[in-house]
Amino acid sequence: MTGNEYGVLMRAADAMLDRLQTLARRENILTQGVPTPQAPVFELLRNSIETYQELVSAQLLSISPKLDYKLSPIFPISPPPLLA
Image 1 (cartoon, rainbow, N blue to C red):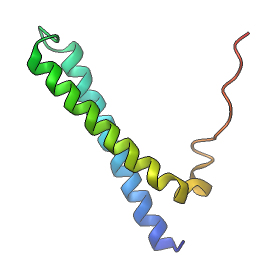
Image 2: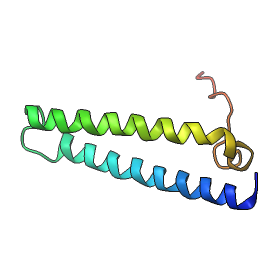
Image 3: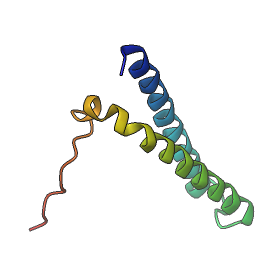
């Protein structure tokens, strides 16, 4: 992978992470910041956000193998610690 290809993928990954953060904030507002979060309109909006989050996550995961060797210090893959 060339440096330019890596840069393009990193910018795309960064944009996707930003998008996921924005969507999480919006979902939080629709859950906690409205008077009747169980209203159908808010449920519909939350479902739309969750679907969009799934799509963005899938896109991010699809490029992560290409970035794996560079991301491993940031996102170490190790088993979770056992609870005592």
